[in-house]
Amino acid sequence: MKLRLAVIELVVSDMAASLTFYRLLGLDLPHPDEAGAQPHVQADIGGGVQLAFDTEETIRSFEPDWKRPERGATQSAIAFEAASPAEVDEAFKTMLDAGYEGQLKPWDAVWGQRYAVVRDPDGNQVDLFAALS
Image (cartoon, rainbow, N blue to C red; front, side, top):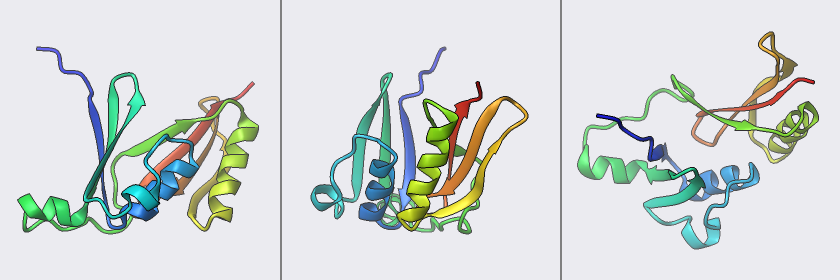
């Protein structure tokens, strides 16, 4: 049996805020004015993979005892690749200027990438990276 990654799902507390955050990072998602009140939003992010957003209420509709983990308590992350190290710095600044939390300022990682980490509105880790020249 060979499985194929098809969907990455995020559980969100505020659909509009999450759509705004990920649109700012360049994903082609529905506009928050159109989809911000929806309980589920799903968009093609390429390569046959969908990114899905479900509200906490949606999850509780079929798992009534579900509780959100402590803010930022994630063991996984979504990572966005930039075209250059300068774009990592620019993206980090853009997200901070928009009011989002910066977890780790851009730095040159020992594995050969410019790397930074921001948090989405629900505290999920979002990595920004580019290969160093």
